[in-house]
Image (tube, rainbow, N blue to C red):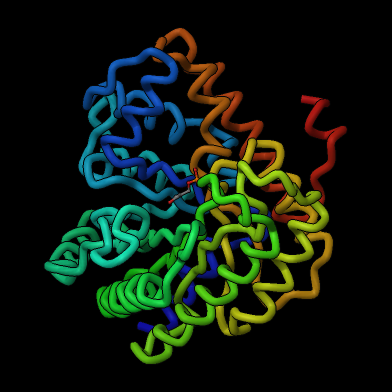
Length: 344
Ligand code: 13P
């Protein structure tokens, strides 16, 4: 079992490949569709995602796995082929989001802090997802920087849930993506890159302590962290080089070398920013794990816009997606540059 898990984890972070996060919940995908004036229905969601999964070279060359939402793992494409088979043909491993969302954490900061729920019945759900073809899963915890937060209580509760989830995944033969996200949005004035470093270090240390207590095999997980970056509304923004250096420093201080790979979330960075930061980190190098992408917005935003909900734009949407996937693949190898970005 352990070998199988580490084979899957290593395949997810194969050189020059990364993960497409297409697991937006119904509420989140509706927001994305609202931005292009498209109704969110079972059919439009299917058409949009099928467009991505059929993006030819964009999928085959650069995407190792796709994180799906419950609806999508059960859906069939227009011609009746299960979408899971469409992505398998493209060489991508199907994955599944299994958390049930970040809910208000009772306590003195209930207006701000969240704890991710979804452990009840998870063993049974994982067994079903394995039957449906999923070989990896995702659980996202969110940590918010604000006045008086994060609290130790919030970090501890989320880290504990992540570890229980990860242990259940491994029991089911599924690689857990462990995602503790220190949010970059929020308007706290003290949310500069140093505060993000401090909170990210604290969070990751706690998560790995809990993973150890739960006897999770680190060889069979992928970590999906935020980059160490200033809050979006901070007056004190950091350069890409600083983001890359502090992120690598923080990961070196907290992530054991047994972990095969780290696949970042984009978290609200622009497409180009997410790509550049990843490339710079790989240029720094000298780390024991693969550093790659598991982007949602930063891989999809351009494709979503180019598609606009119209079947005649499918090819344009696929071109936009393939371009971003290729740029991020180059970044995962530390070989991205602005000339390549513009040449397309
Ligand atoms: P973003 O890259 O848009 O942050 O999404 C990645 C993800 O899966 C968040 O859970």
